[in-house]
Length: 204
Image (cartoon, rainbow, N blue to C red):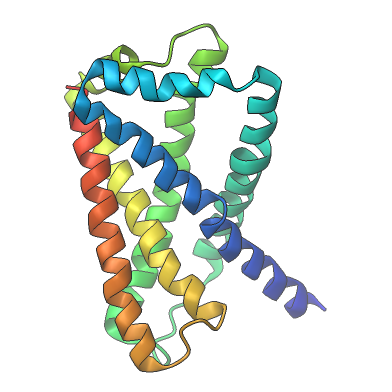
C-alpha cells in the first residue's frame, strides 16, 4: 500500500507540474513578454486581470496556482532529498538532467517564494504591481541576476519536466521517441528562456 500510495503521489506531482503549474508559467512568461513593447503595453496587458472580480481572482489563484504549486514544490523537495540516480536505466546525460531537475527545483522554491513576496504580497499590502514596480526591483544588478537565474531555472525545470512527464505517463515509451522529445524539450527551454530573459531586461 505504501508503494502504491507513493506511486500515486509521484504521478500527481508530475501531472500538477505540467497542468496547471507549467501552463501558468507559460502564461506568466507570455504576459511579462509584453514588457518588450514598453511600459504602456505591459501595464495594459497586466491590467486586464483587474477586470476579473477580486473574489474570483483569489479563488482562481489558490485553486489553479498556489495549492498545486505548493504540493509540487514541497513534494518535489522531498523527492530531491530522497531520490537516487539510476545509472543503469538512464545515460550520463539523463542523469545530469535528473540532478539539474532536483537542483533547480530546490532553488525555485526560494525564488518563487521571494517573487511572490515582492509582488503578490506587496499588492495585498496596497502596492501597485506594474511596470515601475518591476523596474525598481531589477534596478539592483544582484536582483536582476537573481531573476535571470530564476527564470532560466524555471524554464529548464518545466522543459525537462515535460520529458519526464511523457516517460512516466507512457507517452514516450521507445528509446527513439524519448530521444526525439529530448530535442523538443530543448526547443521549449530555449524559446521560453529567450522570452523570459527578454522580458526581465526590458524593465531596465
